[in-house]
Length: 320
Image 1 (cartoon, rainbow, N blue to C red):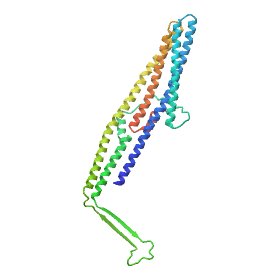
Image 2 (image 1 turned 30 degrees about the horizontal axis):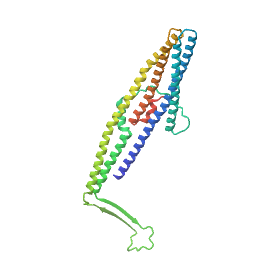
Image 3 (image 1 turned 135 degrees about the vertical axis):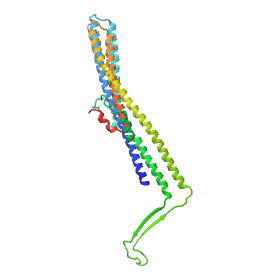
Image 4 (image 1 turned 135 degrees about the horizontal axis):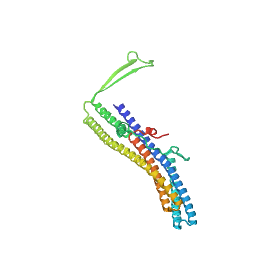
């Protein structure tokens, strides 16, 4: 029982290490794709700035030609200045995300994520993840090992009720100086020990071991409920991010068409600078929203796999 209890303790320690590893995997996914998100948002801000710079130049040309009022040029200038501020902020976000990623991977070298933000993956049903968590979640597996350890603790405590039997043997390899009549060359024997009464010490040890087991059982039952709830929450988070990403696709198409239309109308002198600016800002919002939804998807996926004890399956869902 003592040996089996020790083995269960080793298993529990191993599961604790596995849980730490899964947590670090999720952190790496978070910071890796946050750096990727920051770079992609920077690209969106750069394109928006370039578009509004061209628009400001076009507004200046039309104003000089007497086709639009000075107020239209001012609106374009204000929008360009705001786009420049957004671009500079995005650059700072990239620098901050880079430092965080370097800290996670433990390097001072520049880190440039090569894997793009993934699109939506086809997941199994929620029940599959819940079932996987019940058997593979590191916290549940650790508590299962501790439960086995407590059971062996009860067995070890009960062992004091039974006799202890020991076998022993001895052989003299060097026989010089031995009295062949008195000193034997070898001997074997069996020792038998049985403690019939020691007060209530044994009963107290067994009772304490049973209480320890009951405590682990209660912890395990509560943890199973908590993990099942966590898995469902992570699954719902992923589904929500997918819905957000999908819904923004049609919005992206409309925003791109709206910008083209407003730019054409402004160039013809029948549109306004404000309409062009609004269309460009709307397009940028949709583009950043889709990128953010992609980031939310991959982080939610990593957290779902961590909760279900399947962090090692992450690459199955991310195209290489």
